[in-house]
Image (cartoon, rainbow, N blue to C red; front, side, top):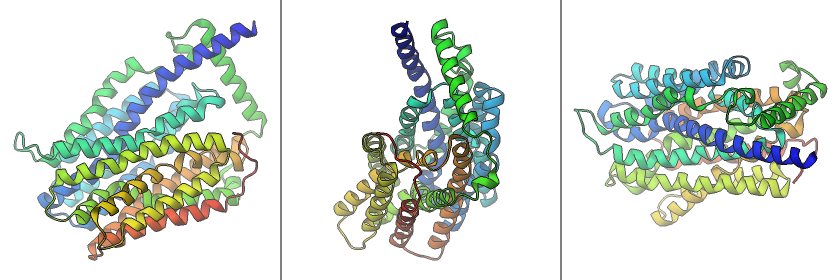
Amino acid sequence: MPVLSDAVARSCRRKVAWRIVPLLLAMYVISYLDRANAGFAKLQMETSLHFSPEVFGRGFGLFFIGYLLFEIPGALFVEHWSARKWFTRILITWGICSMSTALVRTEGQFYLARFLLGVAEAGFFPGVIVYFTHWFPRDIRARAMAGMLIAVPASLSLGAFLSAFLMRLDWLNLQGWQWVFILEGAPAVLLGIALPFLMTDRPRDARWLTVEERDWLEATLAEERRETQAAGGPVSLSRILRMPAVWLLALGIFATNLGGYGVVSWLPTAVKSFIGTEATDSEVLLWTGPVFLFGIGGVLCSGWWSQRSGQPRRLCVAAQLAAGTFWALSAIPEQPWALRYVFLCLAGFFSNSWFTPFWTLPTLVATSSAAAVAIGTINMAANFSGFVSNEVVGQMKQRDMTDNACMLFLAGGFILGGVLVSLVPIRKKATP
């Protein structure tokens, strides 16, 4: 009988991984592409619309305000309603909002488009976290999440290369930057229309699993939920806010994302400054793409190192400090472009190496019940950082500060984040 159970478990895990992870990976790629494409389109938008750096910084940041205000309900809808219907709504509305950015002509319209995009996309990431708990037992959930997080650097790299091509278009009296929003926003709408036929809410609804596989998965997940409830039950937000470790993690990711979200929005602008004004917008994006591409290696290596070493805090801090160091080295003025580009690519690698081990830390500083509430609290600090970072860089650029100075500010965020995370007290050692 145990041999049969093991065979059912292996078969079920394999089917779930191949059915769930690629779909969520595609959704996450589109999600990050639509939030980051304004940074690519900015290269032409500032010439066409004559927006100041302050306007772009505020517009980039307003996305995170909209996202933050409506983030929490998303997890509740997935838990108590339907992930399939909720994600369908999200994909279609955020795709429409992204495409409509091609129509903006004034500063107010740009602000509104970015804010509404954040509102439309809010609840996606928390909903995904909850959706993973409906399908993946604890022992494989982290690996499944790591597979999905490859989408972050992958989407940024894809966006840079794709936008480099789209910026050259001049169809139907629309400029290249407008086609960036239209053609990069359309996949969200198309996938949203197809999603009801591709996504399954719960294992009990999965016709692509056998009866034995459904029963095993449902029983396994139910037992884990009972263990979590027995470990401490519901935990209040007030109790979480009295935990120093949670504050250190929240401040640590806030500081780190000052650099991370700033790089996503402003790296193409910095690369154009570093190369020189003679470079075309498409050439700038072709140079920018490989920097993000190196991040895929960072995600894969950090997941492997974290699992092998059992020291996620040490790995997280090392990656944060390395990312800050290389971003700072890339800001040294008057250095050869080849050397600066090496520093940028190394910074891109380490900038994507910290978040996989980071998100294992809440479970090491609190019990299962407390960790769930702590993750939501920490993620709110992470998103608010996106608004602050873009607002600060926009103000710096408005005051004619150089891109080298802006890069040093972003590098400082990574380094400060590493220092704060290094102070987090770990309740128990991670298991390799």
